[in-house]
Length: 456
Image 1 (cartoon, helix red, strand yellow):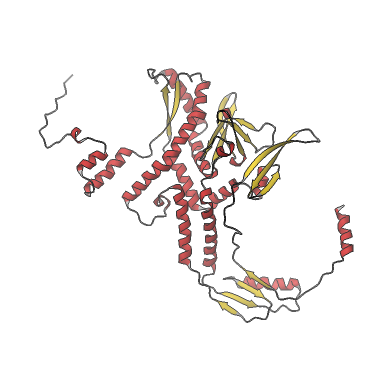
Image 2 (cartoon, rainbow, N blue to C red):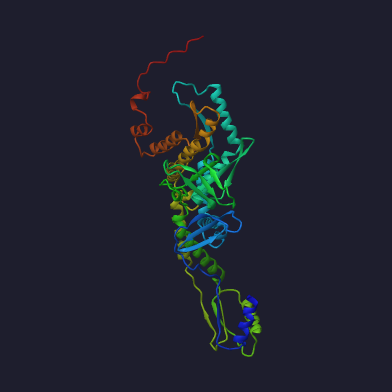
């Protein structure tokens, strides 16, 4: 039908080619800037289950809405390829923006690199947590942590939670035993919330078009960022990249400008005159290609209009361009509260200032991450294991992060330096350590000798 239609159309119109030699101009630029720098609204998607009228089978259809545009298809992956959905955008930023990748990786490394331990807490204060039966439960939990490589799971979870706003793992079982944790694609997870309790009952995982794509909470580890409400949209989380997405896009544009400037800095812009009368379109194209190949530096303008050759000197303001890029880096780093010295972005910094900055980063960002993952692991991972072993009415397993820094030794070091420099007095020195002066032995006064140890 389509072929017949076009044959009729050709007969009716009878198009004849015409050669028109009009003034023609083409400007060859080093790159094209993005059409817009403004940040579009966050996309949202819905999973719809339809019944095929022909086969009678249930089919899944994905509808994704972004910036007023609606995409309707069979998979989120196809929508992401067409620019819908945030996860592809966030990963592209993470992959191509060094300072962003370093910030997120630093949060993950600082949070998890010291490792963790598990401890037993008895529900009855009079009970002994060191009982052999309780220690067997602890050993079972520790063995499972080693089996699933929990250290790596936590590291990736911190990074993915910051990057995508959520992170999920499903439990792999064999003969009723947990043998591993499989990562889930963040873009395909839709949390399901119990309206009465406000708790997650599981997620709908849309990666595979199957009739049973619901993963219950009993087989799930799910983490989200900035969950304020007990709703599906809130449990999907918010990417930490979203607040600096505009800065990242501006930075990309500035970097392209700098690349173009560095490539053509020493060469002027040349307007080149080419006489093309009497040449065929193919011959014109060949001529222009040869001219562009010969004149690589700078921008080249090829035209067949009668104009006089003119050379324009190219003098970009590199200092302000570099400073603008550094400003965007500062905005990105400030979003994560990371000391610039850790990212090799600080030219000079005092050691005391660096120590204070690292401590502030730990107490503000890292400590918050550790508290969140501690509570979620105990709730989603340890408590179900203890319950399955039949000890949920007696004990709980607690997740304890190993200290990244020793607060007392670091505080003493800083106070000693301050005392030696005369910044703090002796009374202030002991007060900051939490020591009372009347509890400190004064060696200048007469102190009775300690009693000698009795010989056994």
